[in-house]
Image (cartoon, rainbow, N blue to C red):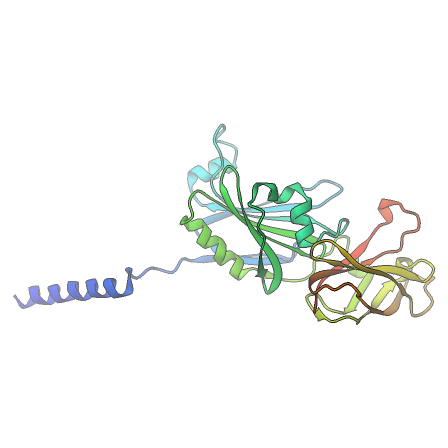
Length: 299
C-alpha cells in the first residue's frame, strides 16, 4: 500500500510540474557549427539537418547557396535528383551574391533585382539586424510561404530565406536560431582587393556625422592624375555625394600611396549607407573597374 501511495504521489507531482511549467522537460537540440572563411560566415544549425553548399555563379559573377533541410532519406534522395517529378522539401537557404560591381545597398538590391522575389511579397520591409548590422526583412508567397532577411555587406549580398508550409512549422524557429547565431568573420573581398586599397577610417559599421574623415592607402594605379572618386549612397540607393580624393604623395608608383579627405553630406539624410571608393578608370573599360564598398551609418 505504501509503495502504491508513493507511486501515486510521484505521478501527481509530475502532473503538477507539467501543469505549471506547461510542458514536459525537453532535451536541448544538438547543433552543428558551419564556418566558411571563403564567404566570411558562420552559424549554428540543428544536428538533424543536412547541409549542401552549391556554387551557382558564372565566370562574370560569384554566387553561392547554402541549403539546409531535415535529414531524412527521402529528402536526401530529392536533393540527389533521385525523386523526379516532386517538389523539394521546405528548406533554409542562404544565398550569397557578388556585389562589388553593382554596389547595391540592401534596399536597392531587394527592389532592383529578381533574385530577391520581392515582387511576390506584400511590399513591406522591416528593419532588423544580423550580427548587429542593419538588415531588411520581408515575407513572400510562392510554392511555399517564405521569410527573408537581406544584408548587403562588403563585396557580397547575403540573403537568408526559410520556406515553410504553416506558420508554426519547426523550421521557422530553427531559422530564427540560425540568424541569432550568424556571425560575419571578416570582410571577404573579390580578387583580394585588400592588396589594392585599404580603408583605415571609418571602419565597417561605424556611425559617422557629416563632415567625416576618410583615410587609408591605395596602390598608385588606383589613382589617375593623383585622385579617385568616392561616393556615399543611401540605403535607398540614392547618391548622397561623390567627391574626388587626392593622393598624399607621388601616385605614379605600384606601391601604396596614402590618402585622406573630409566628406561633407549636404543631403538631409540619416541612416544606413555605403561608402564606395572607386578605382579611377579613365578608359571606361569594365575590366578595369574596381571599388571598395563599406557599410556605415550616417547620424
